[in-house]
Image (cartoon, rainbow, N blue to C red):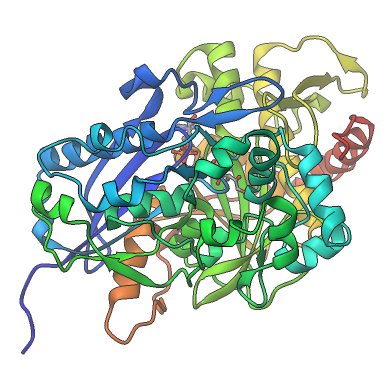
Length: 528
Ligand SMILES: Nc1ncnc2c1ncn2[C@@H]1O[C@H](COP(=O)(O)OP(=O)(O)O)[C@@H](O)[C@H]1O
Ligand SMILES: O=C(CO)[C@@H](O)[C@H](O)COP(=O)(O)O
């Protein structure tokens, strides 16, 4: 007997600056959306850009902020008119690398939540410390120690898909182990932001998925198990049980927490599909085809590529893929993305993207040779401290440029960096490739035109939604629970072209790319 029930799918994205939720139907059409912006909607946590900056590169978020944001976004979905009894399955995405440290009684609390009360009041004492997040750059000594313990950076990259990076969870755990023993010992479990969010929806500590789990410097990306040497270097013998066994990303991890059944009217059978990293989810949402490159323009900018087999990268990262269609994926993350663009937009023209675009429109491609590097936060690729540096057309250092030249210098500088480092990692960008852009900034065509010009590649966007990570969350819920589907997506991704490169690329941008490479050689790098 076939069921004639209307089925829909719910996805969440716990990203750096906001929590978003989306409901799609069986044909992937978007039915409802809601979001909570951390700085604006939850000012009591005193975050800026969703994070709290401490000393010496420490960057954290209080996990209770995410819990309270979930209460809020659920209420906004109710107001939007969502009928939760139609939700067949749900999944989610989370900013990568951040860790959540659960207290000893947290799992019992999670399983006994009263639907009459908010989550945040019931989980107020469930965390032993604030969560270090991906912008944290305070673990350089831990990176060095981890690499030495496994036989060097190349060896670590061969095993885990990445040499050691400050934001990766293994070095972050090691720092807490060596400097905050009481917090380390008090934590019964350690989650990633994605598996933490999944735990709230599941009513017990959810397993870490293999794709987000490969952003920890702890997972052997070939055997799909935690690497013993890496675990030993980052904690004690209890670390494996604090982490739990990782599961394939396309897994149903259980049914929904009864709290949500009682409070919002979900069916008790609603399935929960493992949550994953936002970039992994974006890859799933973009359904990238061979020769296509994903460009995620969120708080950070990331380049994404589906791979059939693991490679040992010299820079960037190889992760286990989120879907059976992409067994592995390559990722290159630039810390200075939208938040940096937004800071300088505010400085140059105020809080108005149209006014910023007017500045861009009043300049010429190539910016008459003016160039700039804007690292408002320590950069990951290349590894540099915060800095702002400008050059004039003759290659001389400049103190100040006019606002229009600054706007273009910022954006062309970012696009040149994405291209140069992507090429260094073996990404091919030319007229025959396609860039598919996603994330908050992908709605800005002026900005995408600069990427198209500098990359010499047409830029596309998804027709269904600007945010592939969010869409990917709901889409994965649908694909993984589809009978016999095993998470495969056979559909062609619906994309539309939004920017085509001008024909004078080589004349303008080939020399600028060479200049970017020269400049970057002269910038002091962060040493291990
Ligand atoms: N029209 C626009 N042009 C450029 N950037 C934009 C525009 N609209 C939003 N953004 C940027 O998008 C960012 C948020 O993107 P999002 O993908 O939601 O980030 P995250 O997932 O990291 O929270 C903001 O920092 C904002 O500056
Ligand atoms: O560190 C990385 C990827 O390695 C970041 O991309 C985080 O995953 C945060 O994502 P956004 O909030 O910028 O989407």
